[in-house]
Image (tube, rainbow, N blue to C red; front, side):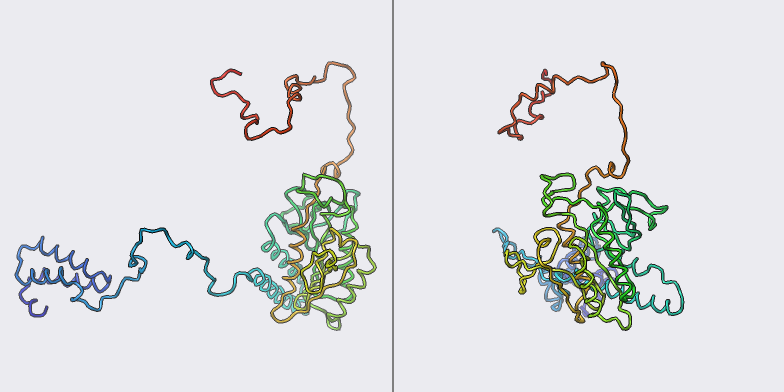
Length: 425
């Protein structure tokens, strides 16, 4: 190249220099050099023998000019295409390169618990300096449950009331069905705690204590037991959806109220064993339907209830225990306290959410005549003379003669019987 540059015009030399620069940058040397050399041959008016020789060399042996040209990174284009069918056995999901996704939900709960504990420590410092900590910890737990639970479940602070006119007072966390149940009385703002909800529409209620003492544990349990004792008609277990039921047998139910005490920390002198023992002793005094379902002490452990379902062959646990749902046979069985001590990698908040979601999965509430039950008795009057009634429709009466047995809706529906456009009725 150095021997010929002196005989080339500056314009041709500049064009060839540009071609080699693009070859190094793009890696497609042969195509670029052919394009530039062809451009030189077509547009140049002063074709020298050296230029034609260089172009010929580039067209015939492009790889010898730049032997170190990098290969294309797109290896898929380099693979030869086959005319046969694709190898579908290679279409497999790939393992996530970092954390296993099967533990992602647990990791979310664990992270939320650490945030709550950090906020509890922060609020305790403010209390020591006589600042009002407000309801910060409750707010964090409500917001966390809003993120973790499916969107069909509303999470808020509210008061629960029944059709008899009784109320349990203000509750820290109420998980409510807003799709089927209206509020009895709304608050002055969207986030107001001064809202009254019907007990029939509540799935769960939680009481949150920033620091748990023997007295605060009893206060929380008292509030939850009062919620259980509101008038709440049982809903049959085999109810399919909120507005569909097949019978009224309530030996098994689908609408028990889930209740739990959630504590951010333990007070000095009140350790985990003392809290768990006192929780069990108080529940032993209660009727089965008033039992508080869980005690969750963040950073320490969670206690819930199980029953020995191995006799019915419904348990896979080594101890033969199944979670007590307070819905089916466990209503009539001996309940066993189930407590998991917390190791550094464990999360009591995850255990609480897991039990709560299991309860929500099996729960179906009954909104039957909710507006009537929370309304008032109305007196009606009928006409005292004839002539104001609507007689039966003869066209509808004639439909009663049609037999519905063995009717195929795919070929004998009203759509098939309707006259087509242009046809007479």
